[in-house]
Length: 210
Image (cartoon, rainbow, N blue to C red; front, side, top):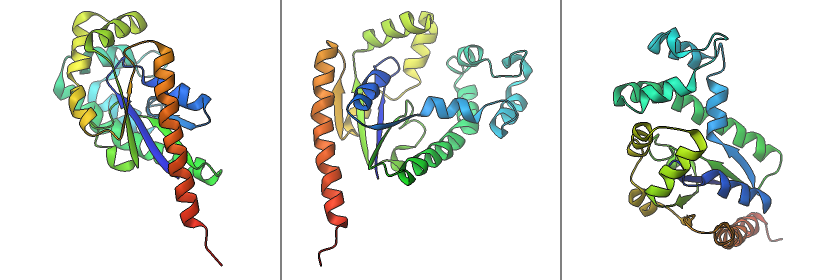
């Protein structure tokens, strides 16, 4: 199975690009969904987070208060490192398990949206990397409109991630999402066609000649 990571800055349009690939037939996973799963009430990561940060970062029903936690960790690098140390290893395991499930179902290719691919040291888990790029100002506008975050928190989110140029330098493919969606869709389709050729080549290598 070909394992492909889709990453990029916060608000760059990673989810939009992933949906476009899904429309073309890609099996898809979302690291954020995996992160939600590993911090469900009673899970080991949930227990560790309560011990590390205290009950004030959890709601009355016991679930993690993500908004409050985000406000803390994007303003405090030490708190962010503590959170990442608890959550990231378990997210990586959860994603591996989900990829194995898809492989057992016969999927030839899977795309995983991984916002912190490089920051969490997860790049080595994937065969190819797609970086979604857009201008910082556009990122900030999207975060403001989508999540209703304040300027200070938006700055913290963007600064907590690797600079775009460093991500682009490690990309196998780049999707420029700074313009019209039809242009993004065209770029996605071009990459998809290249990926299909890779899949076909890999399949042909496995076919034994009598």
